[in-house]
Every structure is written in C-alpha cells, then in structure tokens.
Amino acid sequence: MNDHTPEQPAEIVARLRATFRSGRTKPVEWRVDQLRRLREMLTAHGADLAEALHADLGKSPTEAFRTEIDFTVREIDHTLDHLAEWLRPESAPVPGHLGADATAWTRYDPLGVVLVIAPWNYPVQLLLTPMLGALASGNAVVVKPSELAPAASAALARLLPQYLDTSAVAVVEGAVPETTALLAERFDHIFYTGNGMVGRIVMRAAAEHLTPVTLELGGKSPAFVDRGADLSAVADRLARGKFLNAGQTCVAPDYVLTDPETARALEPEFARAVEALFGADPQSSREFGRIVNERHFDRLSALLDSGRAVTGGTTDRAAKYIAPTVLADVDPKAPVMQEEIFGPILPIVTVAGLDEAIDFINDRDKPLALYAFTDADTTRERLAAETSSGGLGFGLPLAHLTVSDLPFGGVGESGMGSYHGRYSIETFSHRKAVLEKPLG
View 1 (cartoon, rainbow, N blue to C red):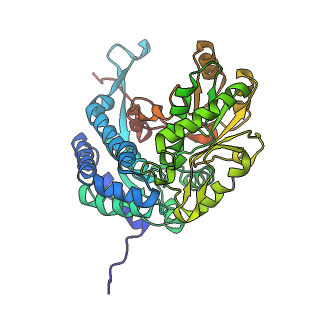
View 2 (cartoon, one colour; view 1 turned 90 degrees about the vertical axis):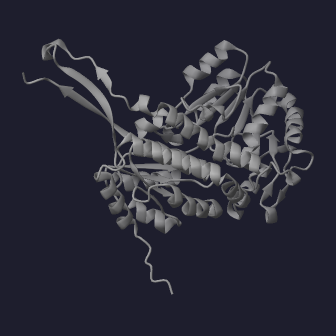
View 3 (cartoon, one colour; view 1 turned 135 degrees about the vertical axis):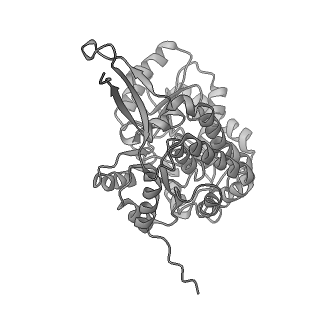
C-alpha cells in the first residue's frame, strides 16, 4: 500500500515561492544551467517523446522532431546565445532639472512563480517553449500538461524532474479538477494556450489575484489568394500548412478567400498538392496524423457537408482519421465557417476581390494569423494596413512562428500577449525603472 499523499497545489506553489524568495532562480548561471539541462533532456529522450506524440496524435517521427522537439531545441539555443544581451540594463536619458550626476536605467526582474497551462495539439513544444522563457527570466514554474495528450503528459511528468531543479519546477498532471485547483492559487503570471472559452475561465481566476495573463488562443485564420498568383505554389504551400498535424494547428490556414475564377483554378491544384504530400491514400501515409479523440472527430465530421469535396471527404472513426479535405462552393453561413475548424478541412470562400476580402476579414474576430498570396505590393500594403491579426504571412503559412526574433501571439479573440525569444523575457519579467542621484 502506498501511503504517499500527492502534493497539493497550495503546497506546490508555497514550496516554489519559498525557492524563488531564497534567490535561487535569479542568477544567470542557474537559468543557463536549467536551459542546458532541458536541452539535454530533449536530445537524450527525443525518441521517447516522439513515440508519445505518435501515440497521442499519430505524428510521424519526422513531424514530431521538426515541429516539437527540434523546434524547442532551437528556441533554447537562441535564448542561450542572446540571454546575457537581453538581460543587460538599458540606460534612459535624464532631464536636466535632476542634475548632470543623475542616472537612470531599466532592468528586468523575475516575476516569481509562473503557471504554464499547455494544450494537446503540440503538447511538448507548447509546454516547454513558454516554460523555458519563464526559466530564462529567473522564475519558478508550475507546468500543467494537457490530459488530452496522455502519453506526452506522462513522458514530460517523468522526464522533467529528472533534469530540472525540482525545488523550482513542478509538473501537475490531471484534468479539469486539477487545473481548477491550480487556478485558485496566486501566481505571478499565468500563461495559457488553448481555446477562448477556457481562456475566459483562466482570466477570471487570475483576476481574483490581479495576476497578469498571456492567452495564446486561436481563431479562423484566413488565406487570401490574389488573381495572378502562382496557383501551383499556392496550393503546395497551403496544403503543407493546413494539413500539418492533421490540421490541428492554431495558426493553420482556416479558410481560403479568393475570387470565383481563381477558386475554380485552385481546385485541381489542391487535389494534386494533397496527393503529392500524402499519396493516393493519405490514410496509409505515415506523414498524416490522426484526430486527437472521438469527440473532435465527430465535431469535424459534421462539418464535411458544408461544401463540395474537391479532394478528401472520407472518414474512419475507429482510426480517428479524416482525409485531408478541400471544400468548394462554401457559403459564409455554412457550419464550417462558424468556428475555428482545427482539423484537416479547408473551405474555399469566394469574394469579388481585395476590397470584399478585407471587409470579410474585418467583419469577423481578429485572427491569430492572416496569410496572403499575391505579387502586388499594393495588395500587401493594404492587407498590412487595413486588417488586424496576431501575425501576417505573405507567401508562406505558419513560418512566422519559427522566427525566434518575432513575437508570437494573438490580438482580440485570438489572444493577448506574446512570446518567443526576447519577447518571452518581456512576458515573464517586470521591467523596473531605476534612478540614482548621488548624495554628495
């Protein structure tokens, strides 16, 4: 019989707060050591994590390493290369009335104890990347993996304590009750990735303690295809971006906006692009993943009647498989256009041209990303100036989040706050103003 009583959330937070107050997490040497240990964990156990990702989501080893494990390693390396520079105090000009001997500067202070709540779709990357930013900033961290990716959650809960400082890093597994218990505690920052409904719950809980939050949400990210674009290249790039992880990517192109003539010309190009990626039978392709569970499978299957299938449209519930599908003749009021799809279904919606496309985008919630395929400088300039989105990509979807020197985050319904690279330091730190005036 096991007499060990699991540590409760209040005890975990109190323990980590005591560690933070001791000053243990603040030296740059400790921060660097934790990042190096995390990197060692990823390189030593990449195959274990890839196996877990396959069990949860059907990810191939290639996809698991490219989008989760190696992605996180690159973020660690970038942070290690630049951390000293990012943390350097920044001087500020002092007005003359304070005297020539007065000096002023800003410095980054760690916040304290941070909570990171991760989603199921990229359960390794989207837990470890914000966590490494919090550690690099000198904080103690509680991480909550998603219960909907149980194999990845178990692997992380087993591995992280083997490599990181357990007096400053804790892993809490579980579902809604465990998350609710964590949210009742006072943290110094909460970082949540997921949907807007739970984001509102997180924000309400944080408000009880006036805790700042970063919300990485989602939304319907449009892809505008202009007249005259290279449709073969467009289809190839959209298919790769859309059907990665079986469409279960927060910045995946959610729907295509284009004129009717271009829409018709895109149809055979999409069919060709999907076959080039996954073969004539995507279900047998090792590179095409599966839907996370039956509930999401049923939700997505119900959307397949929203248009005419250009390619795909087939399903296998026992295998949680939905073929990479492109839908044409989609009405903007169709079910597939009412919510973020978060699956391998790409609707094509027609508009008269750029003016109508901009109105269409602006009539809806601000998306996490907007993509456009055009050769016209004026079109790019208008989309940048006249729309609002978390990120904007011309000619290539998803790629902006791989640039560590760009902030990644949403706006409005797609989220608040950002991270990656130095923006993680800004998120998980307080920039403190300092002024010094000698007494003598």
